[in-house]
Image (tube, rainbow, N blue to C red):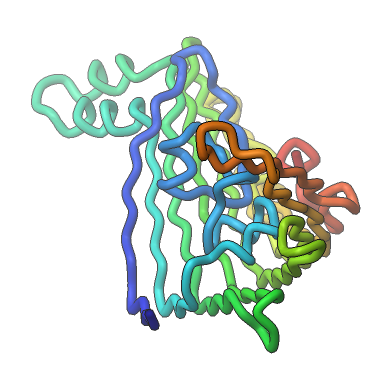
Length: 253
């Protein structure tokens, strides 16, 4: 069955512990994998394979074209605190009640993207897409020090997979280039009170990296009670995932 995807929207609210102020910077996220505990290496489909297991590209059920694929993510603290800040009463008190929590939001797009479960051969698969991700974390600590973090990633990814050994073993590889702009040094309320001037030259950094992912899946011949068993293995960012330029090291991980 042929399918043309003109656009899709996924909105997700993720919970995070109140004491975990530093949100993990992920190059890619999806509502489907997040709902399954971020499982992608053995179950990924379509865009999930760009930063998951490239061998899974051979398991895409049909060819697809993404004209605009939008993903919006927010943690429960940010959703709750938006309600606090917009409710009536003392605005300063409402703002103070959000202290000690991380306010996280992400807007991610995959456009355009094409997925071919068969590419010149029934054993080969190919997918190509352009990914952008904008992530913001605003932390108001207990001492009322505001620590903002913003990361913007953009770049293409190309994935190829091939079935071998009677189609039970699949190997795949992904090449991706990402350009990143991120905050370098936070500008806190303490800086403002002490008279430190805000400078765009010192507040942000930029960098890029080119890296590879390798992966495989294996369909196990043994089927107890007709269960289909499959194993998966992948190595992401073979070159280390480090960014060239003056992007802060904290955000490279």
